[in-house]
Length: 427
Image 1: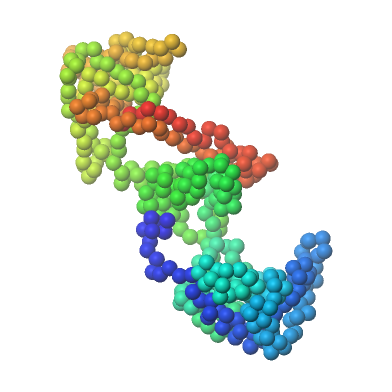
Image 2: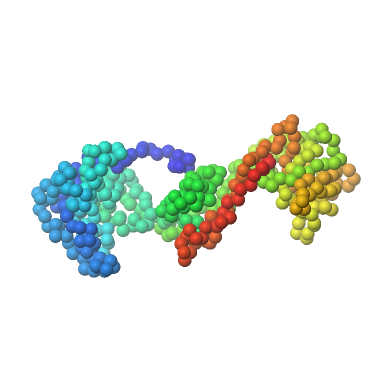
């Protein structure tokens, strides 16, 4: 997805590339008196951090009883962890930070845990693995990252990030935080999207009803439209809530200037021009973008039979309706003369199946129609139309602007009509 957006990584690396260096720095931290091996249980660690027996915070914080171990003992115990002498959960390396700090990210974070499990890149070499809190800033330092960018929930981590680099006397990158971009009417949580995918509410992470980059790409949105939209927002530490309609409007605006237009009919109805011969053919030139010569044009035949969309025809005229109806002529896009209804064939449900029409073809006074509608020629010679077996029309996946606020959970806010399937379209 990064490549699709137009960016090429300078280098792709893995934290496991630096496991040996990270281990060396862990021993260095112990030798400086800034790390110790702890054997406390998870419940004891929570109590040390001020969590009361009933699970609520606000209790008195106090150091682990293992915090005062000597450097020699800590080094020995850490090597015992490395050599597999402890099972999972029986020992872990903690950083000796500031248990009295108001910042919970300074309450002696864990640096290494025992995890006697093979690694996909290093195999069975290691029985202990570094934590995110220990690894992140140090790998950034190794790679000489100038700015480590993260969302605002990592703001408190900045202090521990800087503490570790400073205590190991290594280069300290600058951590900077930015607010999340949220889109209303959908969900952006990976956990919630995974639930939609795993429980088959959507077909996958690239389902066009979602707002993952994969889904947006599958919907046909070019990367430039996404970058253009983001550039209008700027960067802020505030959480940004953008209406989905604003994003879609921005995408349409981008497409309008960058993408050629074609004609497609999702619910076709045939028109037969009774006054034209079976072999009638009039070549019509239609620009790919009206009003712009940059995209060029295409030539299509106007023939005795064409398709229009069913929504462009009504049996009766109304005040606000300007498309085709008995007694109301209409124009076809770029066709020089208007058409008018002669008669209509209907099925047993009284729905139109074929419209018999008259092509004015320069006869009498030429009056400009109220509107022009799109059309598709029927021509075996020009292999028209192109048949589309199935088209999916996507609406908003959820019924409300804030699905997570639904009292019965976001799954109960799913729009049952979020996807419409249409068959046998013409283009």
